[in-house]
Image 1: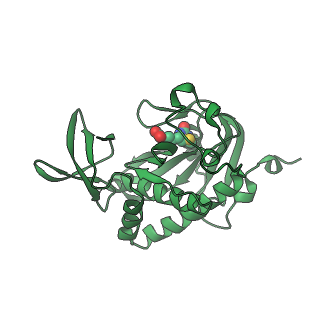
Image 2: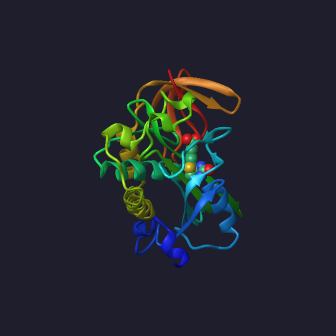
Image 3: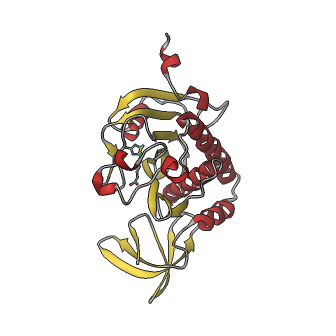
Length: 260
Ligand code: BTN
């Protein structure tokens, strides 16, 4: 049997764009780490790197992404956007909108927490970790790492996450074909990336805001070493959070946000 035949996600392959090349290995430490290695081999734009068992999944900052083998989706998309650095945060926004659009095709309506979390009724359903390379002041390449809890059950998560995490299957009671879920998310990534390429940033922001679960809520935001408080009022054209604070309307780039 050829190597390709063993890839259980081949049916998610798209004819063009994101997902036209899907690289699968049964086990990887982290699909983001593997994707960053593959960048050095100049793999094609839109390549997806996916595994069934991620042993050292990474989250934002010091966080880890825990997943039990063969139950969820852990994958990374390689993009060569050649955009100014100021757009690095917007990739996470586009990925978030693509994930919620993809999961809506299965009747699930998740919410988004700035900058990179996918939630369902207050529990974490997915996460995004974007890692970029900058050359000559421009975004040369971005690895968009995505984790989605698909068929996990309560006891699949480490006990510390039991009350904080959920999965598509826990929400609906249905067991999903993970390749079909991947196909739907990749399809939506192509749709939203094309909308972005066409310059309709406002449509992407509107879609993100319509799924945001902390619009106009009081939030605490880490900016460098300091915390600021204010009301979350939306997103800038570059995906920065806009907060109304005591000192006025301010924009903040990717950091940590707590709803208070
Ligand atoms: C977060 O919630 O902090 C982001 C989690 C991102 C997890 C995904 S799983 C696939 C990809 N590979 C990784 O090591 N991390 C991302």
